Length: 267
Image (tube, rainbow, N blue to C red):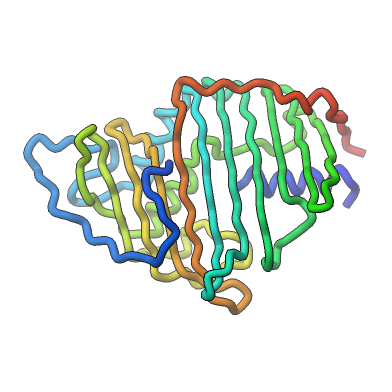
């Protein structure tokens, strides 16, 4: 694979891939509280009887489709001795109607099978071109640009696919209604663990804990999932939180580094 092919492959891995809930501590058992039924208002796909993953996920996506917003994700993978094996931060700023967006992927790895040279990837697109900046552990940086139709873009800008996968993997129920009208959902039992989207080389997820905060229109503004698993024979704990912010107020400016990016063409 040539240099361009490697760059596109790394970008695809990065792009393929709300915090009202905090903490990285020990896994907790979540028990939904009784829900009052008088005048209760539920988001689309949410009821006392069941949660409909597809309906809720599509409502979340639909509510963001014509708005600008920022998504921030934090993920930690810890060994059974508490050592942080990998810390990953992602941020994505999306303009109204997804006309442009930018973001970054930043990882700090100690012991992890997929650990490579790249520690940070920044990206930006205006719909016509996609520009990327890669930073390696050595401090070396490389900048590239492609026509937008020649490289994979972010296919799940709103996080709908990952949200739906979590809802299909875990038995989620209503925990409570908040005074502002939001609904908090919790879950602690797998119903189809194969639906869970996991990091590379991670297997056998167990002891799951899920919390989501959902607005009345179906927008998931905060999501937290934690679970035990196995990584290359080692017991680990994964905690991932996502926060939605700056709705209608996010601006997507062209980064200054884009001016130095080299336009690439397929050979």
